[in-house]
Amino acid sequence: MQQKMPYCRMQNDYISARINIMTQPDAFSANWPVIGHNWAIDQLRRALQFERIRHAYLITGTASIGKTTLAWALATALNCQGETPPCGQCRSCKLMAAGSHSDVVMVEAEQVGGTLKIEQVRDLQYGLALRPYEGRFKVAILRRFHEANHAAQNALLKTLEEPSSQVVLILTAEHGDLLLPTIVSRCQVLNLRPLGLEETETALRNYWTVEPEQATLLARLSGGRIGWAIRSITDTTELDLRHESVNALEQAITGTRYERFQLAEDLAKDKPTLLTVLDIWQTYWRDVLLATTGSQAALVNIDHESAILQIASVIVPEDAQRALEATRRAVTQLGQNANTRLCIEVLLLDYPFVKPFQ
Image (cartoon, rainbow, N blue to C red; front, side):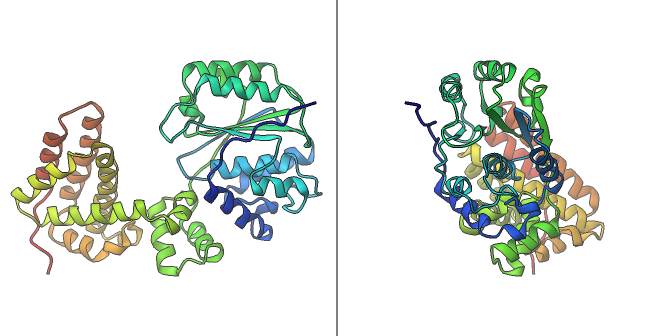
C-alpha cells in the first residue's frame, strides 16, 4: 500500500491567512491568492494553461515580500481540479487551505536563521520517490533554502538533475547567489520586487480592514514587504521595538554625553536586537536627511514627523548624511566583531547634538 507523503509543520496563523485570502479570489490576479507580483502570476498561469510546467522554480526576494505565499499558491494551482486554477473550491484547494494535502510538503530550517540539513533533504527525497497519492503532482516547497547547508544543497541536486514528471520543486530564497549555481541554473527564477506604497496600503485597508492612518504607517514601514505589514497587524513585537528604538534615538539626540554613554551601555547588552535597532535608526536618519532637503513627503516614520522636522530645522543635510553613514559603518563594524559598547559609544558621539524639543 502506498504511503502518504508526510506534511511538514505549518504555523496556524499562516494557514489562517491562506484561508482568509482564498475566500476572496475575485480580489486578486487571475484567482491567485497573492497580493501584487502580477507579472509572476501571469507567467505561472500561462505555464499551467499550456502545460509548460517546469520541474523546479526558485522564488527570490527580500524577507516577507510574498515568496512563500506565491509558492503556496503555485502548489495549490498545480493540483487544482477546477477549470481556472487555483479555484479555491475543489477538494484539492480546500485541502491546501486546511494545510493537509497529502501530496504537498514544506521543508524548512527549524527556525529562521537556522540550518536546513541534509537529513531533511533525504527524507524529502524518499517521499518524492512515491507516486502522488491523490493529486497530479507531488509538490515540495523548500522554504528559505538559502539556509540550507552545502551538503543539503548538493543532495538536492540529484533530484534536480533527474527530475520526475510527477514532481515539482519550489524553492524560496532571499538571493539566488546564496545558492549553488548548479541549483539556480536548473530552476525557473522568479525574482519578486517590493510592492508599491499605494498597493500595499490599499490591500491593508480593503482586505484586512486596517484603519487608513495605520495602513499608511504600516505600508511605509514595510518597504513593500506585504507579509511584514500583515504580520504587524496582530503581532506588534517589531512595532513595539521600533517605537522604543526611535524614542531612545530622539532622547539621545537631545540628550547629554552621559545619557548617550548610558544608552550605549544598555544597547550593548543585546547584540542581536542591537542590529535591528541600528536598521531602524538608519530609516530615521534617512527621513531627517530627506526633511533637510524639503522632501518630507517620502518619510517612512510618519508618526514621528514632528520630531524629524524639528531636528531637520536645526541641522544641515551634511549632518544627517554623516549620521546615516556613521550608523551604516557601525553595522559593518559589529559584523566584524568590533567591541560592541565602544562601537555604539563612538556612533552616538558622532550624532549631532540638538536642543530638547519644545
